[in-house]
Amino acid sequence: MKSPTTTCTASAALLLAAAHSPTTLAFSPSSHVVHSPTTVSIQTRRTSLHLSAAAVATPSNDDSSSTNTVALTKQQKRMQQIRKEGGITAFNTKFGAVNLYAIYHGLVSIALGLVWFVALTFSKLFYKLTGDRLDKKRRLPVFCSHMWGTLLMLFTWSFPKVENGDVIKEFHKSGRKAMFVANHNSWMDIPFLGYTIGWHNYKFVAKKELEKVPILGMAIKLAKNVLVDRSNRRSQLMTLKQGMKWLDDGVNLCTFPEGTRSRSNRLMPFKNGAFKMAHKAGKPVVPISICGAAKVMPSYWLFPLKPSRNVCKVVVHEPIESEGKTEQELADAVRDAIISGLPEEQRPLPTTQ
Image (cartoon, rainbow, N blue to C red):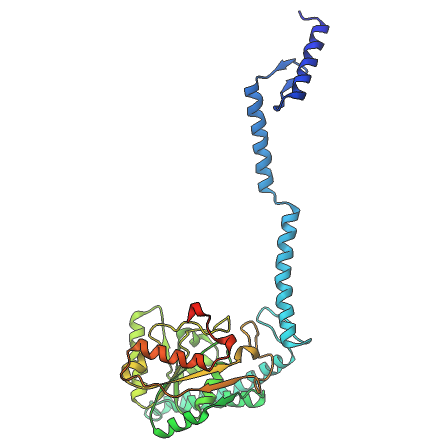
């Protein structure tokens, strides 16, 4: 049996060793058992692993606070941008930003839209009663839609300035038909393009999803616009034939060859086959540059934030013949013409030319 003095001496030695050793020793005072260095090392590593796992599983308050700060900063930046564009009355909603003018524009648009809907309903009834024997080119619904857009721009002071408008007037006088193409970065591009073409029969080449938009979808189907279903190859072929037939029957086509609105305000690459209808039908293409539309209605605004008058401009370019050119050559020539009429901030960056 060990004496108390021996035991105390051994304990002191162990404590001294622990103080100078890089590894913490496991010492049990009750049993006076000293664990081996291997056991001590394993226990130490296990403890370290548990602590590390807990640290990963529970994010620190600092990290959470940092994330919230970043998110708040983004919201603040967007609100600052909205206020800068729309003035002190501007505010954001889950549908988009608005200000007093935007609310006024929206109310006018809705009021005129109800009249538009009634006119389209009577047009639909007219075609049903006549068995489609009259107005086979569906001029009536185009007239109704054009009237809605014209009155909307009139009551909201939104007519754009048109440069080289005589080019289109002379082209209409020639009796020829063409595909009118323009850049697209705002909803206002649609009434601007219609206003530039004038009171003539034209069909839009648009994506099929627009059929679902209230009133607009009804107008698109009733006027027999050319709708492209990008998920259906057979439908695309039928669409091509439909567009070519309209051109051959003396009806103009309109399209935005980018396929969708540009969120960056810069001209995007054109979709493949955007000019196939005009090229195969041997019809000319009239390039149109729409300038400043995103300044009055950015993509994150529900309605325009200010009148388009004295802000937006439409530049009409000379018609480009498709005969004697490949489809790609035609597309390149049209793209170059549109770019030439755009301000610097709307032109594509060199990498996307």
